[in-house]
Image 1 (tube, rainbow, N blue to C red):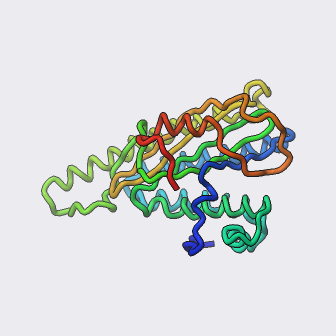
Image 2: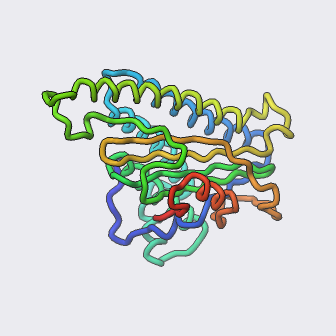
Length: 271
């Protein structure tokens, strides 16, 4: 599938203030969750490899990442709503249905559409939050009209700049950009390990060590400057008092507000 077409009926509100909570009823479900988080870590390492390669453009590195994420989202959407998941999402957004499948499909479809646009749009920060609880995990897809956080690693992309190769000091700019990309690549590799540490395998770690875990990450762009961030998050052990038996939308928790205050310059998530 190619990039999703812009929706005339909008869809911003379906993400704002919500997360998807998915049950982890047994070790098989935990293994699947662990495998998905390993895939995210591997994708981060692959992006690091591409950024460190001077023969690969920043745009190509991000395009490969988007394709990887899109494949994951599309598989989830097909599992939820079948091949016509875009129609299901539009029906929900137009108010023609208001069921659990419609809400989840609209949530993931809107998130995918925004992810596909983020490396081509200046000042749109992708700021997702993934949290593991004893019996479930949550994924909170957030976006804000910014491009960096208080702890992001910035780096330049020469192909997104107006600097001409013949201009004075242009070679210095290109050399510095390559150095920044290598620094960013090292940061991506280092923070990929955080993902593995926060979401260990049920076959390798006791339940006491894996029942809580969390990460928040951020990626954005302002003209020719890109930025990356990833950090641990401690889940609130009192967030949920009831079990969940199927994926469902829930209101975001205190962790979402806490990470926004800490990492966003305006401490505000926009859609």
